[in-house]
Length: 302
Image 1: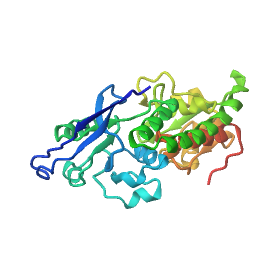
Image 2 (image 1 turned 60 degrees about the vertical axis):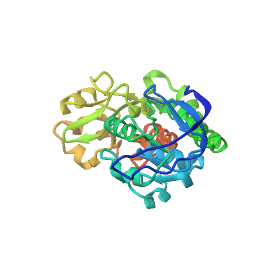
Image 3 (image 1 turned 180 degrees about the vertical axis):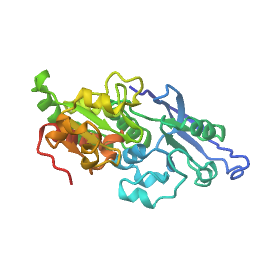
Image 4 (image 1 turned 90 degrees about the vertical axis):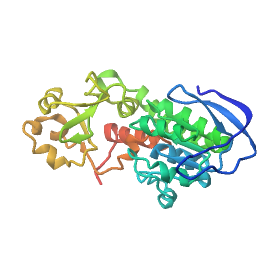
């Protein structure tokens, strides 16, 4: 659980060479946050201007009711629709420090995925930066709670969690009734050139397991790993989930893949909102519901 402690300090940010020294701010109440990198960061309680460099964090901020305090986002932050019209500070992997500085945020919330250098640069400029990235579905709950507390939207966070937990509880109950030999084997394709899938330790693999599936990529060396096409044929998944841009027809045309159970039985799924699987935010519960419907329901491709 992330620890938050309260203190009162004078918060002054000096961005030399970017915006010049801003006027001193009055004493503000702060909280100490232990983020997902284990860093203890002092941040203003109820920050007024927040920059989010993570699409999943942006979704959390709006879900708990802090959307009006979001001053800037990345070009990848496309949900909810209100986020699309906000000032952009670059894309997910290339955050522009001058654009961030121009927005004069009193808090930046980043993620641990590919943003290590971004976090270092922001801290060097004097901005308080908190890093949130959930390694699994349960971690999303903690991040929603923490963002709600930091922003002063505890009630909104509680409402968001009630919906999140309610959706998961229904799936959990259904999965609990499955015998081990009734669980479907699943191949999640995240790239077709090169062919890549998810392994243990990845957020998506946890979602697959939560939805009652058995991930055939388990045991690969990295959370997101290459896999030989012949190995997929050998492991013979019952379900294939395409998050790579490929289509069921593409898969059926691959050498040797027409004999895979998922292909023969028409259980190759594509065309869904991939953000439901890859974003560790409030809609992850909908992603688990979607996967369960693919595995055990009557899901049909759009």
